[in-house]
Image (cartoon, rainbow, N blue to C red; front, side):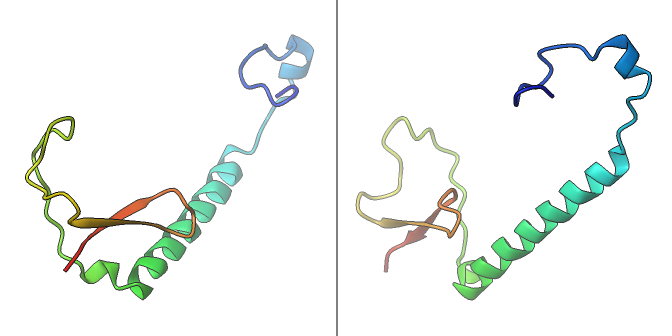
Length: 90
């Protein structure tokens, strides 16, 4: 990599001869990181009792009015501020 760029240039032939990255170690490091994130996420869902919430999957096109009544859901974000969890209001 050069300057944060990825696959925008080829390694020079003389450097390519000695290029031997430890692919397995890189994979294992990333896999362990991802598994830890999954465990943390699962723990957060469990702590908030989201795993006990029934799930209803609707085969509907959300570009159009759906069978979900207006004002019937709340939207919450996880600690990562990425995943939106929809919880039906009582």
